Image (cartoon, rainbow, N blue to C red; front, side, top):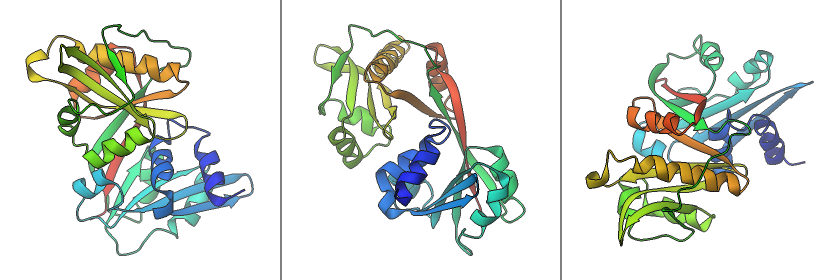
Length: 257
């Protein structure tokens, strides 16, 4: 069994908790310094990713050297992971457990900069599709300006659709009113992103209809839906909760510089 396979199996024991680690490993594992520690029945995973690897990190943290992600089964494994952290580097820690921050604080001066919430459906929960929504598995150029307004690059969007992404959109004739795309984070978890409603069509509940339909089709394909929002994006939080999604994990970003 390869190093990569073992790490993925460990992380998939709790896929929503580790969705960011799984997403990065799926897309960029050849660029990540992956550390696997195994001590009897316990294990730890440390991912050290150059900050230039992922477009969002490069844009958001231009002074960072490395993005650090981790998970472990027991605090007993943490000292072995700590030894593998870079010294004298600008680090971005993305932590999905407050216990991880507490373990790091004696060794790093950490500054919290943002938090992201991942929403998903509960086990056994089912959603309905809006028949007025159009589902497309090809890039529709009419939708690109809307998705790119949410800070997605054309390169990212193209890559997502080459990997099986699909779009859900409400149109008025040829004019898109509200849209989103659903793309693979990893084998089991697919993300609903790029949600955008044109200004003239807002406050009409169109985004709720689009996202609810996206969740339906994600589940129909046998995947776990994920909807991620920034902690201060109250409109997106209300949208997620209004259609019945629940918060599955909170990922906090901490800087040591």
